[in-house]
Amino acid sequence: MNSLSPEVALSRISPELRPLLCSVVRDGRVGLDSSSCLRITDLKSGCTSLMPGPCCDRFKLHIPYAGETLKWDIIFNAIDPELPPDFIFGEDADFLPEPSELAHLVSWDAGKPECLLQLVKELLQQYHLYQCQRLRDSSRLLFEYGSLLEDPNYGHSMEIYAGRKNSWTGEFSARFLLKLPVDFSNIPVYLLKDTALDPGEDVALLSVSFEDAEATQVFPKLYLSPSIEHALGGSSALHIPAFPSGGCLIDYVPQVCQLLTNKVQYVIQGYHKRREYIAAFLSHFGMGVVEYDAVGFTKLTLLLMWKDFCFLVHVDLPLYFPRDQPTLTFQSIYHFTSSGQLYSQVQKSYPYSPRWDGNEMAKQPTAEGWRDCKSESESSLVFIIKHRGHCQGSLLAWGSALCYICCW
Image (cartoon, rainbow, N blue to C red; front, side):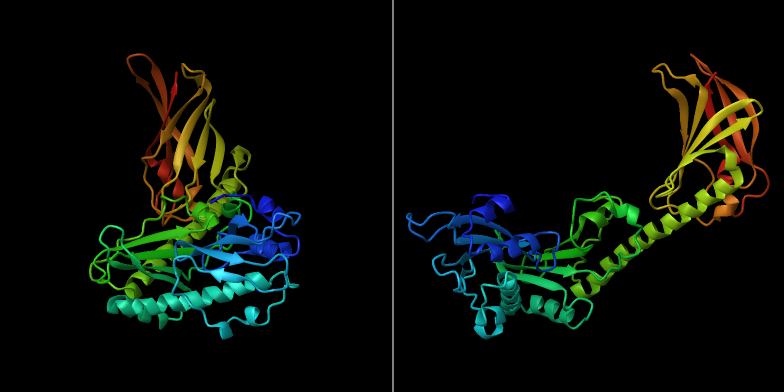
């Protein structure tokens, strides 16, 4: 298989056929996995060597479907480009689509650039029905399919690849690919900006592989579009539960949906809570605010003073704030480490509750005192930042026993 860039592949196609292929290569997102485009490889020509090039009129089309890649051969006739193409469906020799259901084949119009792409989509609909029929070889898998089909949340957003043989056991096996009905529209835009150009629709796909007909070995896997994976904290941020022994898809899939929905809500809530928190500090500290993240509200730096001693406090707010506790870093503006860096100390252990209100977080922090500490090689100045008054509802009740250590 020769892998070519889309533009190089198109340059080798017969000019009369090129508009049809442009639509496939550039706009060809089909099925549930909208992040993967159709690809063409193995370009060949059925013309004689006397015909001037480029004259490629046959190729292999790679189609993402249910976690597999279908490879269909498409054969045109460059000498008579008005004719519709022939298809060879790879390993699925018994796949015989119903011609009457292929409107763009029945009324083929080579002058319409989208005609081939629409025909491929119609063939995929027929292919889906073909795969569903293959589930009849397993009553258990047919039950799984039927129960999902009756649920409007999943019945129309499902791809199935059935009847494949497990390479180890030779057992009948199948894979279900479902688009999960999770709303991503309220995720803050800034979290979606660092993804690849045009990554496709924001989508979550659940793949569930049954490695035998009786469903004794079931392996689920969650796939997120690049933008959503980035927004939720990376590929390691979400772990779905194992498929329960004796469980059913119609019970398992909603659990994964709810887990993902909760994760999305945590991210949205965290954004609004961080913004509330930063606003409270801007209000209470005003001139003491050195800088802050005005887009994602993930960082804040304060310049504080106890008597005549000034120091910086860096606050890092995590993605899942307030569920996850912020990190405080105290930094001297006078003293350096042996490597030439300003001395700092990270503080993660302090009183904290995610239920505290944003405005109360920033009330009346004062430097209560200091004490000298000594080690074998250095002495340190320790500041204790303590909240004055009661702690309920106060985020800066964190400071009830925060220590800042800098080289003295």
